[in-house]
Image (cartoon, rainbow, N blue to C red; front, side, top):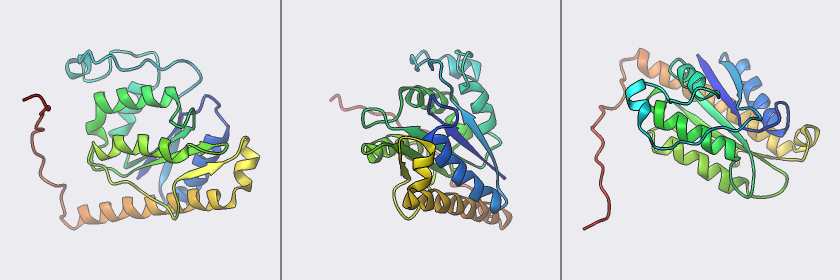
Length: 207
């Protein structure tokens, strides 16, 4: 069993990475393999709604980690998406990354547990978390929680480690995700299958 952790910060080993590493360590302690994927410091192309992924089976843009991550999602059992807070929202890189990942390969994550993690200096974390969680809810994914909202505070990694409540939140998040993944696996072993799918109904509000 394995969880992918997405580091949506432009800094490879900054505050967001520190928060994700705490959750990853707890997952590892509970027998779950982890991989932290850095989105990077280069621009991530946004989704242009071309629909090419429906024909190609992947996003047409190949110069960033989206397609590589999408392939890994098919084998993963869960995902944690971490972002710094930029103007009370997720980073632009995370937004573009998630738009294309879920539009082109959302099926690779359906019914798998997901969690959002936000790192901020002071405020805006809850808005960023809400933004990321919407990707999970539209894709029929159970959202994993902790004993507080999944956020840490600090301007540097060492400050994040001083945020004792944030550290505990990340630790319990990892533990809770490990438990849920194991519970889902146990259900499969006992003949409990996924809910029956239905064709998507698309409507608008034009009368």
